[in-house]
Image (cartoon, rainbow, N blue to C red; front, top):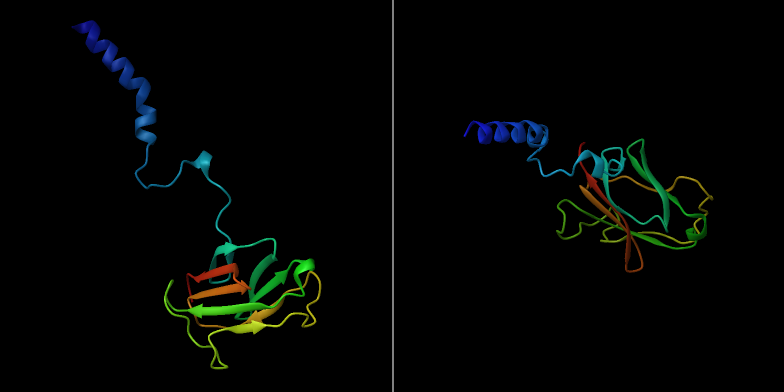
Length: 139
């Protein structure tokens, strides 16, 4: 009986660091984490297609894109909504789509295609492919 009790105590003492280190947050363990989430000012980047964009930034209350050099000749359509998955809202021009035209003098490796918006969600499309999806996380 004493031997069984001693073996149980020994096994528990060896396993206790693993039991105490477990976490119920649902987050992956530190060793499985990837790079931190990408942000642009008050926006979290939910999706980005790096084949079309080099990056996204936020300066002076504007969202700016940096297109891939070989993608400057493509029109980008912007759509905005207040809630994810909800109907798009109209832009200042009365349309649901705001188009950044192709070949609009976009400088290579420059921050271009800027927009100001109060929307919580902004989507950028090239044709039927979403290339960027932003979510406002703060004002």
